[in-house]
Length: 370
Image 1 (tube, rainbow, N blue to C red):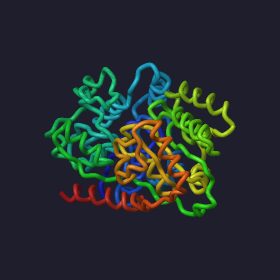
Image 2 (cartoon, one colour):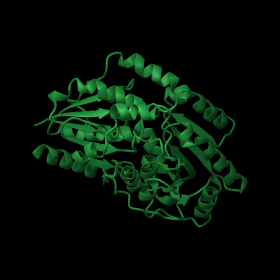
Image 3 (cartoon, one colour):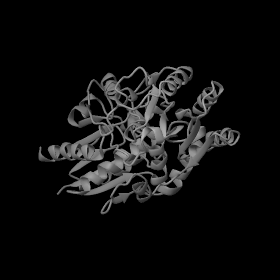
């Protein structure tokens, strides 16, 4: 049994990265003592229930003044811009004072310059992003990169993982080191209705934030209805304080349409009930690093549509009838699927949690054995 530290910059955005964090902690708790270092308002136990993770025995350590800092960052999010790298720096600096107590460090919050052996899971690189056109890194990213960012030598010493082939390409482009791909954990959603019994509706799951382009989803449904299709939309997700203004815009747009329902912070069972009973899932964020919601749609037996970029290509197996390059082409693809009564055909069990947990344990135990 080893002492393992897991670093995660924040649980407050309640998305795919957090599912990876909790899945990693759950996997390692079976054989090791695990301590999670994070800067979050959100209690891991709350997300454990949402993501159906067993975190019994997990120790959690947060920097001094964690609550006020997390609340302030959330409140200032719309003003100060990207903050994940800054949160990572704060967690990293706090962890350094405790690092000697651990045999191994696992980052589920991207790449770090870490002492000792490490396994680092990259959703998207957080440092050295000045020249990346697809990254909204903020003006201070060079500062955070100098403070905590690794170089090629650091990452060659680490066991480096990425959530998709696209992310692995980005890491290799920045650091000259290519991670192995380990897709995030997404279990099949069992008990879904037969296709003919499902509602002719679209579900959009995820953070209610500008980068997710939820308002575009509403416009797409408007266009489909203008073309004569009696289709409705469920927007389901959390709205962190950082995105409250955008969430208000989404709520206003939904309130003006009887065929759009906005459902915030719903229990896992309620979300799965929508996935089991509806035909179509939609994601609008370009260059999604993996696409947890897209994988969930597939796992629930839905037909999923997403931008033709990022890790979503992995999830949708590069299919041209599922991947679009604009909202207008999204309307065309969805309309084609409706008119032809297309049926889902992608495997539902490609990204199971058991697969992910077994792989994480294998990587960690291999490093410990060395």
